[in-house]
Image (cartoon, rainbow, N blue to C red):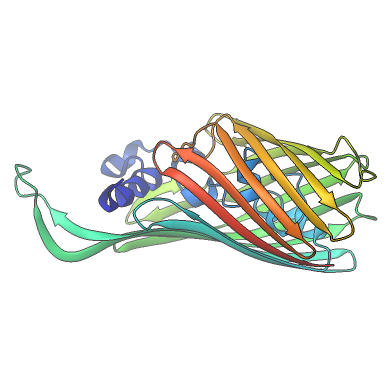
Amino acid sequence: MRPRDAVAAVAVATFPAAGIAQTIDQSNGAAGAPILQLTTVPRAAALGGALTAASGVTSIFANPAGAATVGHVEAQLAGQTLFEGSKAGSMSVGLRVRSVGIALGVRYLDLGSVDEVVCNGCGGRGTSTGQRLSANEQAFALAGALDLGGGRASVGAAVNYYSTTLAEASGGAASFSAGLRARLTQRLAVGASVQYLGGDVDVGGFGAPLPRTVRAGAEFRPLGPGHERLHLLAAADFAATRGAPGELGGGMEVGWSNPASQLLAVARLGLASRAGGDFATRPVTVGVGLRVRQVALDYAYQGSAVLGSQHRLGLTFTAR
């Protein structure tokens, strides 16, 4: 995909009817804010987007109650390739003090810039104006969660802010999210959340609603915590964005661990019914992960009809 097509892709995703603003379907939450619909966490992407019942600091991107699962301090940095030098990624850091967890998460989408060209009667290639057009998005989340007792259940809430810039126009909107997470048994954890309760994003006179989303998910460890060598996990999520079809995703994680060296190596395979909103991705995802003591490295591959091959890489540090 050419750089000009990249900027056009975000323009279409953010303002699906910019030329006829009066016809925008304000009930369709998938009409805007692409970065809020992309899965930037490599492990979750490799599991078909399942993140709502997960633990760790990255879980706040799907469920603010996950902030209470941070051991003591946890930090994550992830990035992914898109096309022609454009990029997306996430950063998060979490801190837990007794039963209270606090986490800050940032996601970004940068599609670079191209020369602005005006049409000369639309009979030729056009003329450059000497100006540059760019498109980028940022999303910030500040989450807080309370452990209700021994890690068995937690509740959380987050304040979010989304901003976007397209050419010379920019806009943003604040929103609220809330969620809960529970460990029903030593093998089964479940979670649920509602995200992005807020207003519309208005850029250059054209508006689109935030992707208000309801999520529910589960993680199941068939072998339980007692198995020292073999690691097995199944995860699934259902997400429904207002005005758009529901999305179902999940996957399997299989690995081997060495308790003596605190090493864990895993392979992941996922399947998603419809991931990425307007940036619809291929249904099958794959990935691998390696954790050595306090450091984990994760990789995920995912194809997209619009974005092409996506390679996600993430680094996580955990201090318990």
